[in-house]
Image (cartoon, rainbow, N blue to C red):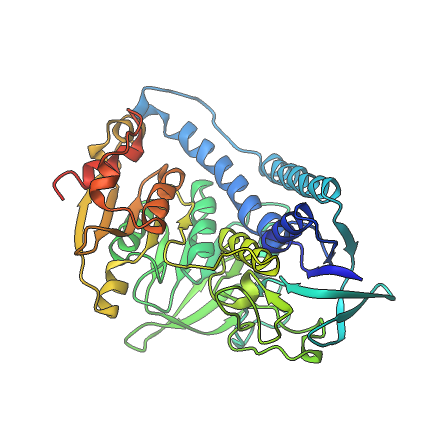
Length: 449
């Protein structure tokens, strides 16, 4: 019998397996596809690899404003795609090596829960039987494709999985949904010169992120040529033609060679026997602050909980779950989860936004500056202003930070640490940051606070 069985080898599953095995537990990990999950194989890593190539191309074609002239600049999509595949394979191999080094038994196949109680969970996989004292469910999420007329059997329709396997760039692209995934693919194809149309039901893109910054990003991409159809509802699709109504009820249409369906993701809770054990499900598997389900020896982490569908959240949830199994004091907190959109420029935020603070009735003061108050930013971002916005509670603790401008993703972690540790702005001001760096904008932003 195993001490711990894990279903799903994504950022939650493989982090949990490594941590549990390193601390002496006998672990078996079931994965039906590739280790790394959606993040490594169909999400975070392949898209960021593509986006980096697009950024390099954009830099090369726009070098004149930096005093650099290049002629006959072009891109080879096959080489871009091949590099993406190479990066993914390298990182998957790294995870496999980690599992081997820590003695985790990895079973390639679909695990199915047959029965279980508070002492033992039983599984089958590849016609073999397995037992474990504890179970951690990390089955992740899948792209949600709404039942829009014309979606079924439409070769023009893609999700984040299929769009990564295109043999060539489409002549034009329609993106249904202006969230993080939609905007990252809009950024990629726009950089390569492909006409992109984004259709979004809400008044603004990037729902859940800082409203002002989302509006600024939309303005930047509008100038770059992306067409945005806001507060519009798709009614039907015929081939590559998307019919939609605007906020006044007028029916319009957009035509594209391919259509990316990017309206959200949903937890994977079916297909592996979860119904055979007593686990409560709401929008995903219901868990407490220790990532424990309604069965005390069954835990869940990652997208399957339906709460924060981010790889770094999943990894932290996995750490909390394993620590609780081992009696180590720890609990999950979501008050400083960073969200990043790897467009060009980048958008990121953590903690509370103004909209969230206002809705919750939380008092705050807002401190914001253009990113151009950073010398490093000015040196590297010709023609872009950007913004840094920090929310401070009445007791002078930092409770939120939101930014537009590259490379904000590389230092939003400073704000995460400040919020997690309850750091006051006075304590933050005493931290010595390197100069010149863009992260100095945070201290500049709080200078008069």
